[in-house]
Length: 253
Image 1 (cartoon, rainbow, N blue to C red):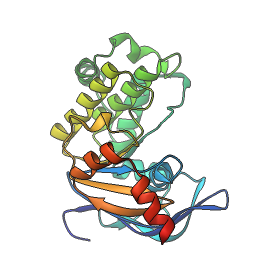
Image 2: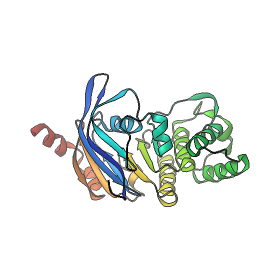
Image 3: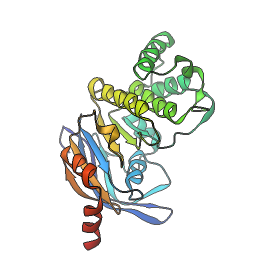
Image 4: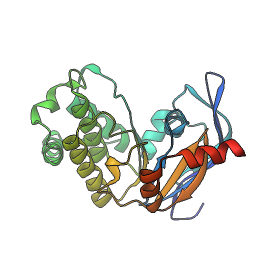
């Protein structure tokens, strides 16, 4: 694995409840790169995200996942998070009894292994919430409880900006958002690209979220396999023509 490579997925086969979903996925992401994974609904895009994060429901049957030069195929979720992998969910969970602020602070302390001074943390949190146009009172509300769809997504991007992971996997972050919320979430992702120097894997079947982001590589997944890889122009082409061409290609193989 070269110095510049962050993530290397080799010939990954993944089952969910004994049904094979991914059929030999290969994917390499370099440091500081932004990759987009597109494809029709139900094709295995989210499965790849969960498998990379180590969700126990997703069984790796064969293949390997390497991250920062280490084989993490068998590593549990908390170890992967500590190593610098972040997954933003399509439907973030509600956590009654734990405030957004304390959740992020706890996650930061877990990641760094150090106690964080409350004053410094609060200043940084306020500054970051401002970027996302979030009402500061949300910091002391229970995580995602009673949050609108847009506020939940902003809370996820807030975690991303505070935790500064090496690799952020964003799964359908723009689903169900209005135009203004998409713009705000995009601004947050742009901030991550600029200031955290991390790598991104953006999983989406729409292209709204990508309009203001610089994309290095685009991958098309159909039936649990990546069947096409290109640059940002592939996003434009899919925007115009959809996935029909790729679905036909896969059926003919």
